[in-house]
Length: 349
Image (cartoon, rainbow, N blue to C red; front, top):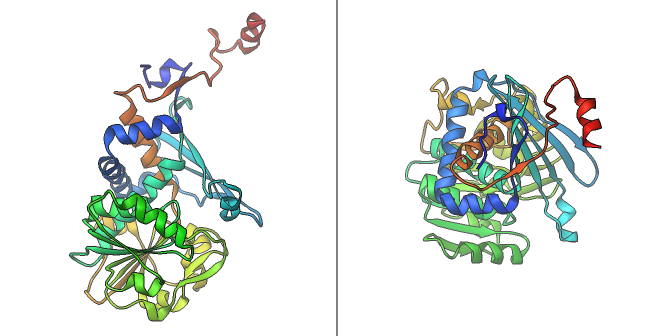
């Protein structure tokens, strides 16, 4: 085991996909989701201490590649992530990611890690944290529209953090629903595979939409959504990609992570630039109200924000300290004399 202190300089811990999977099993999936959720809640409560900027995206006809940076003045973190909906046609993941955490005082990286799995965990943990705040009291049934790679993580986080005991599934591809249902059979939740989106949301207190198509889509029409539900809209996360009918937005109280980013990428890109929204950190700190009535429709217009990744990176850094679930990576040049980089190169020859 190596020390994770940046003063060691030469070696940076790298968490591979294999090590991430082992770490999840070592901690336990429910406990890891709860742990990441706790870090996210704590970081949102100190929101004002962070550098914040909308993510930097490179958009193409096939998808988007993005960098998501932030810092609290002590640590700096960023994530590289893509979203290419057509990748599955070629046997590739729609989303892949990796991330880095660095010490602000020295600038030295202290962690490099895969973030494809970790992003799925932090996205699900964020959804559950918000549902715990905003869903109707006693919520026990959720519907998931879109049963791709995110769906099982969403359901598991809702069970672990909110207490959901029934999940209703729908996808335009029945094979995706069958996959999701099979993966969730080992849980104690009741799993219901539905033939239509309307069937899926009947009786649901929480509705999660997590589709992948990069298009202005209408996954939920206005007549599908009744009073008193909470909606986690997590699939619309770039310009030109939405999931909800505009009329639903006008009937809902809308909560967002970072308005400057969500107005570009979220469901609210359909609305006027001055349409009122509430920032989550304000609800978490008691500066704004969450759900105020049983009949209210609450909508979390989630596009993902860098602070959530920062929270997940710090969680992983802290958890691997007592394990050997990382590779010491020779990432940094480390000459004995920090001014003599050229001399180090010469001696190596």
